[in-house]
Image 1 (cartoon, rainbow, N blue to C red):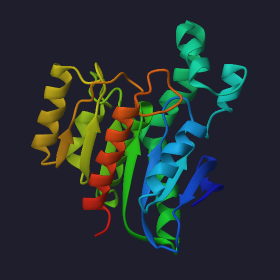
Image 2 (tube, rainbow, N blue to C red; image 1 turned 135 degrees about the horizontal axis):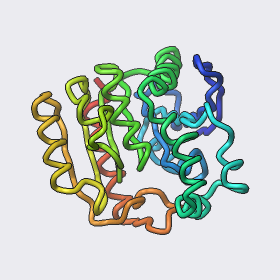
Image 3 (tube, rainbow, N blue to C red; image 1 turned 90 degrees about the horizontal axis):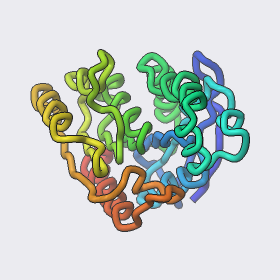
Image 4 (cartoon, helix red, strand yellow; image 1 turned 120 degrees about the vertical axis):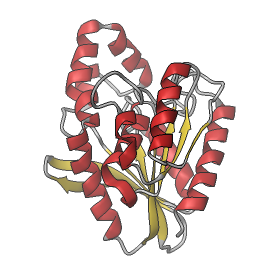
Amino acid sequence: MTTSTIQLATPDGPCTTEVVTPEGRGPWPAVIVFFDAGGLRPAQTRIAERIAKDGYLVLQPDLFHRSPPVSTLLGGPVTLAAFAKVFQDPDLRAKFMAGYYLPALAYENLAKTVGAVLEHIVGRPDFRGRVGTTGYCMGGNASVRTATIFGDRIAATAAFHPGGLVTDQPDSPHTRAKAIKSYVYLGPAIGDLPPEAEAKLRAALDTAHVRYEIEHYEAKHGYAVDDAEVYDPHAAERHYAALAKLYGKTLNG
C-alpha cells in the first residue's frame, strides 16, 4: 500500500488530495473519502488506508482548500480536542462555520472540488470500475450532497454519523433526493437522525426511487474516527463491514 499527496487543480485553486493505492498493480474501483470537521489528519488517513486494503483506490480531498489552514483558526495542531474548544467559543464557532464548514458543503463548491477529483480518477491507468464515496460527520453530509450533484457518476454513497441531512433550509440534502442514482447507506449515531427527520428522509428517498439502507448505530456521534473521545471500536468495525458489503455489490461493474 502506498499513501501519497497530490495537488489537484480546481477552478478555486489547488486542492491537496490524499491518494492511497492498494498492494498490487490494479486497476481498481475508486472511493472518495470525505473527512469530518477536523479536516485531513492521521485518523482520517487511517480510514482511507483501511478501505484501500479491500482493493480500492482511495482519494481524500481537502474540502477546506479555499480557506486558510485550519491550524490558524485553532492556534496549534489540528486535533478533535482543539475543535471541541472551537465549538465552545461562540466567536470561533462562527468563524469556523462561515469560513470552513459552509464553504466546504456548498453545492457549487463541491461540484468544482469533487469534479476535479472525478476527472483525475477517470484519467488514472490504475482505475477501473465505478466510484463510491463515504463520509464522516460533516463529510457524511458532503457524501450525500455529492450524490445529488453527480448522479450516475457515483455508484455508492455512504455516510456515517452524518449531520444535517434533513433541515428546514432550502439546500437540505433530502430535498435533492431525486438526483441521486447511487445506492445509499446511512449509519447515523444516537441522536443523528431523529424519528421525524428520518421519516422525511425516507419519504424523499422512496419518492425518488433511491435504493438505500439506514442502519442506526448504538454509539455516540464520531464513533468511526479513532482520534475521537467517543470512538467505538465495535461500531467502527461494523462500519467497515458495511462499506465492504456496499462497495462489493456496487463498484466492480
